[in-house]
Length: 253
Image 1 (cartoon, rainbow, N blue to C red):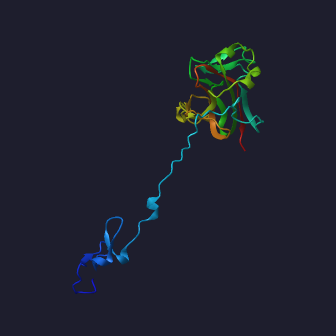
Image 2: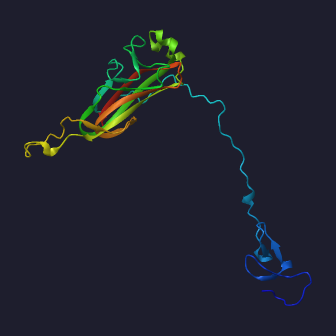
Image 3: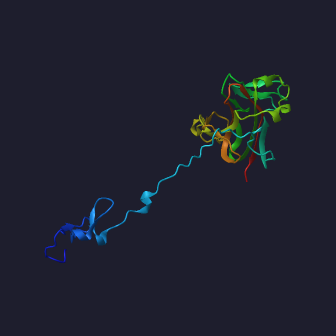
């Protein structure tokens, strides 16, 4: 409330927009947000309101993928408490091929090839297609894949190992995937004629599989598992050659 009741020429009364007090106009100020307040209630604008971001481009001009003559997934040291192991390349790639070929004479004992220009992706399902550990257990899995990319003209080279140091696999990729068995699909404890007979919980039966996922060198709790290699080429003139694929499974402590 104003502290005077006498006439002051050119100094009328105002109501402070913040406090609601009646005050002489000469004791009011207009803020940055267009409200008129008494001097005691006036506030300066927050300095952070004037801060403006600066352009910070982080895009790398003309990016190029790193050059990896080899791609390895997994170390090559022995697995403790070994249960099973397999070297698919040494066996001549006995598994199931999908949009990939096996080429004899390109490397020792065949090479898995994703042919340039024919397909940009393929897969190889390892053999055996079902690995049964006998019971649900903690399985320590180590798996490795070796891949290299070469132009079409190298198909006549008798041994991939002779040209590996001079090739670039920036346009090819290969990785191992694993699928775990979620359970048996046709097993029924009450389907036996003799309900008092001891049921064989470990009998073989069709397996219900989980989705494919990238394999990691880690522990999986499962009874059934299977592996495959997925091969990709990002250049129609570059073929992908998988010249190594092996896995080792041990019992985790």
